[in-house]
Amino acid sequence: MRVLSVVGARPQFVKLAPIAAAMAGRAEHIVVHTGQHYDELMSDVFFRDLGMPQPDVNLAIGSGAHGKQTGAMLAELEPVIERYQPDWVLVYGDTNSTLAAAVASVKLHVPLAHLEAGLRSFNRRMPEEHNRVLTDHAADLLLAPTEVAMQHLAHEGLADRSVLVGDVMTDVLYSVRDSVVARGAVTDPGAGYIATIHRPDNTDDPERLAAIVDALAGLDRPVRLLAHPRLVAAAEAARVDLQRGAIELAAPLAYPDLVAAVMGSAGVVTDSGGLQKEAFLLRVPTTTVRPETEWVETVELGWNVLVGSDLAALPAAVQRPRPPETDAAPYGDGHAAGRVVDVLAQRAANRG
Ligand code: UD1
Image (cartoon, rainbow, N blue to C red):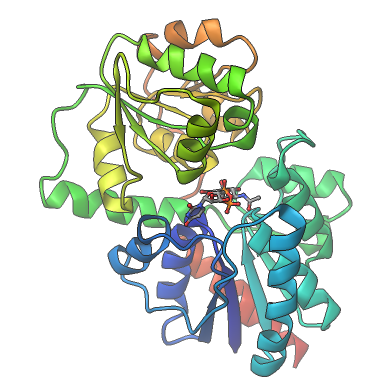
């Protein structure tokens, strides 16, 4: 079986790691990087730290408006998919790279599998929501991370294309957590908070951005703000000072360093999808600066509190007492990637 994975943005490199490992010896795995993320800290460090081979193809598309970026990827992906003629194109999550590869595959009648299918925020303002809905409806095989995702797919009439495999981010997180602990990289639990903010709804409205930064600056412990390039650019444009009060401004971290930093923190403040769930899996309380989340289990279990329009509620949410412990495992057992390869191989074999 030949599988062509298309990735492009930071969270997709994390998801690729366990898939690439599970493919080894079982499939010919071609990795195409669209180049949506290109900085060393947004891309290269993930391939290095997570033990992945370099991508077979890098399209080096770079940044741009949605249509321009997605369209450029679509045009460049077409000849690559034609050249490799894979049994599957495998796409990950909900970025513009995901959508471009989905459209390229269906136009070429190449079977398309979507990993992390069925997540919904029901917020049509988010580019990720369009990307994931359109990709799910285009795909031939929907690999869902959770029961809730399976229910969303069923409601949209997609049950017969859907399989519950678990969450591959659990696979990679558990293995990185174990290696971080083994080398003693976790420091001083509870010293401060870890924060990341990068969603357009938070960064691109100067008033909201200033209010979020004010709230972070006023927290009761040091806040290490790991600044995504979008945040830095938006703050500069809006003349919002990111380095003040409790905030310690820092560059994004490599994945093992992020895991160590979260484990050694008193709490996480974020608008990232992945980080909400990683913090829950590490049992670190999280406050999500969004009106809704795709990872509803983290909220239901008490480990994640949402702060949407009322930013005055942020300090009390972040400084809340630790929630009751839980051994719930809504994101699987850390062996999802093996299941993904099983399902792809089985379906490809059935096709003859
Ligand atoms: C993208 C995804 C988002 C995901 C996020 C993870 C879409 C629509 N959004 O958002 O779902 O959560 O990645 O980080 O696909 N930039 C750099 N260097 C880089 C990459 C980006 O400086 O390596 C800057 C550029 O100014 C760029 C901006 O960041 O315009 C935004 O990058 P882009 O890839 O468009 O979207 P993200 O905000 O990263």
